[in-house]
Image (cartoon, rainbow, N blue to C red; front, side):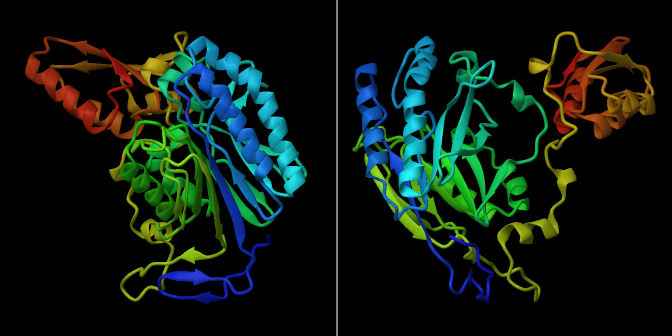
Amino acid sequence: MKRTVLTLVLLAAAFSLGAEPMKSRVIQPLFAQDEAGLYKSFEWTLRELDRCDASLDIVVLPEFSEVPGKTTNPGFLETARKYGPILLDKCAETARRCNTLVFCGAIDDSWDVPRNAIFVFGRDGSVLGKYFKEHLTAGEWKKKGVDNKYTREWTQPYYLDIEGVRYMFLICYDFYFYEAYANIARWKPDIIIGSSHQRSDPHHVLDMIDEFCAYHTGAYLVRASVSMGKKSKLGGCSCVVGPDGKILGNLYSKVKHLDVTFDPSVKFLKPAGYGNPPAMHSDYIEIGRRPWYYRPGGSAIVAPLSEAPGNRSVFYSNDLAELGAAVATGVQEIAFDLDIAGDWEQHLTSILSKLSCHAIMNIRLKGEWDEAALARMKEIVFIYDAQDYIYL
C-alpha cells in the first residue's frame, strides 16, 4: 500500500483518487477466567493467526496476548515467559507468510525488568519497532513486576513510518489520558494501533473513548482487545474507527476476528469557521489553544513526590531567580520559606506560577499559622496543581 496525494477535498472529508485501500484485521480472544482456560484461549489466538492470508495489510492483537486470562501475580510473568516466545514466533511467521504487518501486544523480556509493549513485525517477519506503554496501572508495576521507570522521563510520542503510512500507538490505560491526544495529533498519524486488555468498562463507554480518540487525533483507530464472554456488556470492543469518529466495525463481545478495509490517506475535514477553509479537527483546535489555562505539562515536568528519588539534590533560597536557576540546572528539590508575617501569598504565587511541578518543593513555614492561613495556602497550591509536589 502506497500513500497517495490528496486530490479532492469536500467539506466533510478528503478523498484520495487512485488510493490503495488497506485491509485490517483485529483478533479478539476470550479472556479466560481460570488458568485452565487460559491456554485454550492462547491456542485459539495461534489458530487465528494461521487463518490470516495474503489479502491482509494489518493484523492487530490485544495487550498481553500471551496471557489471555487470569493468573496469580507471580504466575503472570511465568506465563508470559512461557508462551511469549511461541506467540512472537507465530507473529513473525504470519507476517512472512501473509506478507502483512502484524502488531502484537506482549511482554518484552529483553530488559532488566520486563516491559509492556506492542511489537511491530514487518512483512518479512522482522521486528521494525516496539512501543512501550506510557501509562501503567499500579497493578502492573506493583504486583506483576512490569517496568515503569522509563515512564518518569520525558519523551516525544513514538511513531513508525512504514511504506508511507505513519503509525502511532496506545496500550489499554493509555486510552484514558485524553490530554495526550492533542500531542499525538501534532505528529499527524494516519493509523493508531491500539492493543488493550480492558475488561471493566461498558461498551458504550469504550465506543465513546474510541470515537473520541480517532476524531481528536485525525487518524484511523485499529484496536484489539479481549472478550469477557459472548453475552457480556463489558470490555471487548475490538474495532476500527474512522477519523470522523464513525465506527467502521466493532466486535463488542464476540470471540472472533473482524476485517475492515479503509484508505488511510482519506482524512476528515470540518468547517473551521469565519470563512476559513475546512481543516482537520486538531488543526482547528490549535488556532485557539491557550496552554496556560490547562494543567502543567511538557518536558520540564518531573515525577511527583510519591515517585521522586529519596537521595535527590536540594537547593534552599527565598529568591525566585536563584530557585529558577537551580531548577534549570537540574536540582530535584527546592526549599523556601513562607513567613506568616510577610507577603507570603505573593511569594508563594510567584514561585508556583513559574516553577510548579518543575521540582519537588519543601515549604518551610515561619511564624504562627492558623487554620485560615493554612487553608488559603492549600488553595493556592491547588490552583497551580502542585499538591503532589509539595511537603511542609
